[in-house]
Image (tube, rainbow, N blue to C red; front, side):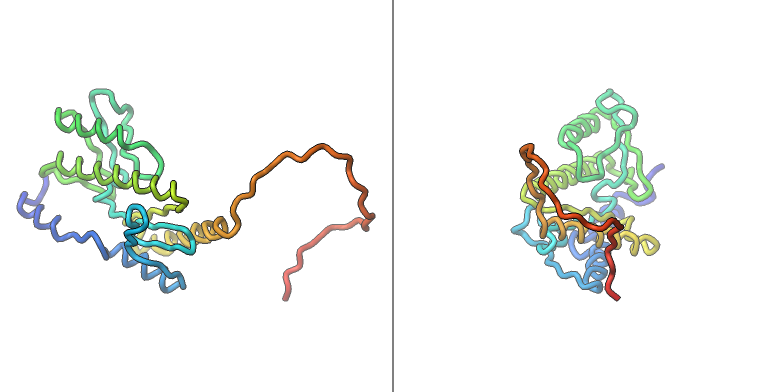
Length: 218
């Protein structure tokens, strides 16, 4: 399907998209603030300069636009480098550097086949440029996530499509659950397990038989 916009119109449209204070970012920030969470924005001292930094929870949040980060886009290369429609990774796990080199080579030779996703449709105009740009963004994302995790940060990625009106509350409740889990992990670090030596069991005082209950105070 051809692009309905001319190259000049497409360029003008893309040039007006902001990289900071986007609508998805504002939705996340507004929800967090209204629910009592405090944060800092775009802290340059934190690797990758995340959109939202929550030091108390040792958590970095990235609010990714589906188009610019290729959410759900599948890349097929006819030369056999990728098989069975292996997709462009959209999570924080996976080695994307090798895939990115394959994509660039395939794009240059004309063997690149891109399958759009419902939330990311790459324009037909100057298609190779957009594919390579998105691939570079994904490679940078993966490196930023790795740097953060290597420095003890937890990484949360919220996608633009997850912030639609019907999905916003469910998405942010899941974010809240993960934040609380990260806080618990920060306050109670994992203890090292060790093998105890075999010893004879110690005598214990006799107790009446019965079940133990945890009573919740009224």
